[in-house]
Structures are given as structure tokens and as C-alpha cells.
Image: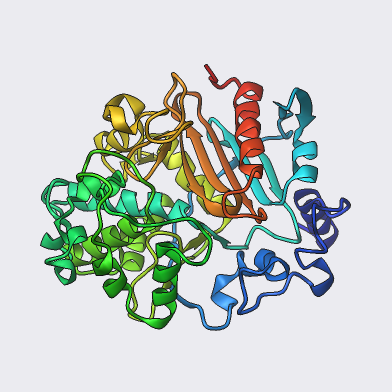
Length: 403
């Protein structure tokens, strides 16, 4: 492809001719900088797509393999429309209203929408935030299938010996997957909660001490869902103890290379070399889409099964969840499986969600996948409500089910 054609393609993908919401606040005049203060508004677009360049951040590479899974691209982009607050909008309207950094929509294995905003390009590696939790769950399922985890009903401390004698150590792997330890782990995103303590220890040492300090209970283990990032971090320790390998090695060998990923991914690590299983995976938009496509095909890439279909159904099917984990019980809107959010639709529909607008949405029966990266203002932003309506619009526009 010639330089002029390449420039035209990038302009179309990146929406170069349009202004973008809050682009000045988000650092456009500074060239979308990458900086140590990577959470501040002027630095988040640049930093959240290049965490390996952020001063002081430790990363470990997850290498792509030599065989890349090709992705078909539609000859014409799909026309996406959605309704929000009784007004009908288009895809371009959505991008003009929200701080979306990247968006891919797929139908039946074909990319029908691919857009990059705020100067992002296809080689950017987007920070997952809590989408990483679902990646960790997939690795647990793979370890179970290989017999390295004997049973999901084993206590965590059977594998994570450093947690012996602690309440988290006594919690079963299944209870951790469902975030149902019953332990009080505060997650308010106010800088003074337990997730802030864990992130602080992540950067300065002592994550194990934070996990062992969680002892108060709100309920018996297994009874109810309460969102707690600490439970996923314990699962990361379980995986390391069960396999003798770190999460980066497991992701590379079991997931990334068999997936046919196009670009290397990254895990961010703490000062002790443990990956941030709860939030800190980084990958290109197209590779996130490949992951979604694998999930839509119930764990298969071509003729290879990367993960047990039964485990995926246990993780993502509302019909397999106890009453306490159903929509209206787990949360007012969504249910919860094994580190996946389950949407209240008749057709199995599930999502990987991260704060500030990150999301991967899948409806397997209709072959619809959406990857959405963003720099929403707040961790739990009202923009997520419009994102949900946009996803439902994607489903309606492409023949999906919304009943």
C-alpha cells in the first residue's frame, strides 16, 4: 500500500477530520503525552494505550506467535443506530458524544466497524482495567482442564501457600471466581478504599499483606456476589502456585499464541513480579477482537479448542448461575458468572467490563462482538449507561437479540 493510500486509510480509521469530546482536556495540545501521572486527564489517552512507556510501570511481554489469525473486513462498514433518552443516534453521533479511544464491531467473524480516536492507531495496546479479570478466569479454566487445579472447590491456599491461615486462603476457587468470598473488600474508587490499598502495595510492595489483612465478613462464603478486585488477585496467586509459571507465561502459552494474536501483549507487574490479575492486561484492539471471536465460538480458534466449552458455559451462561448471581440479585442490572458480567437477555450475552469505559461484549448465537476502549471521566461513569444502549443498538442493527 502506497503512502498516500495508507494516510487516507488511517484518516478514515481515526476520524482525523473530526474533533473529539474533551480532546483538549485529554491532552491533544500536548500530543497525548505518556507520563508517570498516568491517571490524570491530560495523560490518560496516551498512557492507557502505551503503559510500557510510562515511567515507573513494570511490564512483562506476552509474545504473539508466528501464526496470526486473519480477520476479515467488510467491504462497507455497518450502519449502526441506537436510541438513548428517546432520541435516535448514529455511530458517529456516539463517537462525538463519548470519550471512545477505539471501537471494533464484528459480525460472523467479519469486522464491520473499526474506528480509532484521539490519535490512537491499530498498534496501540489498550489497558484493560477490569477486563483483565475475565482473562484471569480463562486461565483458571485452562489450568482446571489440564488438571493443574484439581477442583474449583479447592481452597485457594492449596495452591497459594502464602495465603495459608487467612480468610482468602480458606475461600474456594469457585467462590473467588464468583466474587462471593463473603469478605469485606471495599471498592469505591475514592482513593481510600481497599482497592486503593492494593494498588498502593502493588507499586510499593506488600500486596500479600493487604490480601491477608482482609478478615471482616459481610456474609458466609458463597452466599452472595460483592464486587471485589482482591478476589481476582488471589486467583492470580492460585494460578502461579498451581502451575509454577507466572500469568504472562500462561497467557502466552495457553491463550495468546494459540489465539493467533497479531501483536505482543503486556501484563503490568508489582514490585514482587506478580501480574495485576485484576486490572493490568494490555492488548491491541484487533487482538481484543480476536479474543472476543474465540469466546463467541465457545473457545475455538479454527479447529482448535483453547478452553473447555463446559467451563465457558459455567462462566457465561445465566442459566447455570445460582439465584444469588442472577440479574436483579447480583446487581440491579447484570448477573455475574466466573469473572464475566451476564446481561439480562434470553440469548446468552456476556461482557468483560473495565472502569472508565473499557468493554468486550459477546452474543455467541448471533456472532456479534464489540470491543470498546475509552477514557471516560469517572471510574463508574454515567457514560456507561449510554454505552449499554449503544451495545443494544449494535445488536438490533446487526440482527442480534435484545429480548
